[in-house]
Amino acid sequence: MSVEKQMKAKSGWGMLIVTIVLFAVIVALYIWSISGMAAAEEAGIPMSAANIAGLVIAIVLTVVIWLFPVSGFFTLQPGQARVCILFGEYKGTVRDGGFHWANPFYSRSMGSNASAEDATAEVLSKSNLSLGKQINVATRAASNLSTKVSVRARTLNGEILKVNDKMGNPIEIANVVVWHVEDTAKALFDVDNYEQFVATQAETALRHVASVYAYDHLEDNSDDTASITLRSNIEEVSEALKRELTQRLAPAGVAVDDARLTHLAYAPEIAQAMLRRQQAEAVIAARKKIVEGAVSMVDMAVRELADGGTIELDEERKAQMASNLMVVLCGESEAHPVLNTSSLY
Image (cartoon, rainbow, N blue to C red; front, side, top):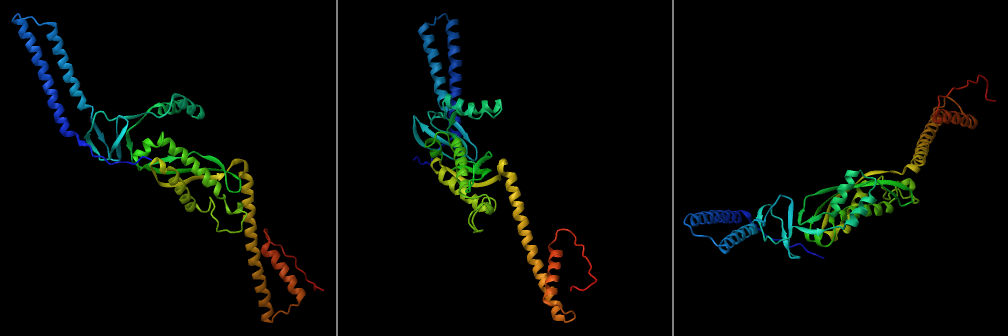
């Protein structure tokens, strides 16, 4: 496993002055050479081919020497870092923002992070994308991985996935992950492409977490309503997803700041059946509440009439009154009483 090493780069302003002075010397040498050749020609002194060739070589060498320090300049914005690699050997990471100068032989790219075959396969696997997006995917896959790494927080919006929950019901789920590069050495050296690695592991972790929990308490075989479900315990599920991603992304030097579910629903093929089931459960719960209230009201009415002594009720009349009150209180439609003018007997 690679470990990031902090490195301090030289300020670019001092070397900038050196390059400006060197450029002025090259220009002066060029002007002096032209003037000397012109003066020799006026004096009738012929210039040999060897002298002219030597002068040209000297000018070319001075230009090459001037270009050498110029190629060592680089700038870093806040939230950026540069990994310094010298002939394949990791030297350190510069995290200080500003104008810097370093060894011009430090690599500026990590080489191709994917072959042409990999790029083509990725485009074919994402055939549902538009043509422009497919070209961008192929270009990004075949491009070089830069040694300049952003350590800012990034957001990954996952696609909607169809997975099975704990009870085997097909559901649709999606997540959003906020992450940043914590160790630049691990991000560049221990994985092939850390951005693609994050996207793949985010999908894998989401599938695993979705398979551990049931969608709702109605789908859990246990009677424990305190069990964690995807719909009712968003905070607990998000925390479990964050722990899963932190463990999976640690080898790539990536830290997870937050992970949340952005979409959760039953799959279309069972959505209607599950909706009817939820409606039935709601109706049963409402009926149970109505019956409990009606029983207490009937009991209170019978006891109040019996304790008052104004109306004497035998057991048959109490049963008849209780039956009528239950029908009135529990019925869905408005009650239409039938008046009986004769005796019950």
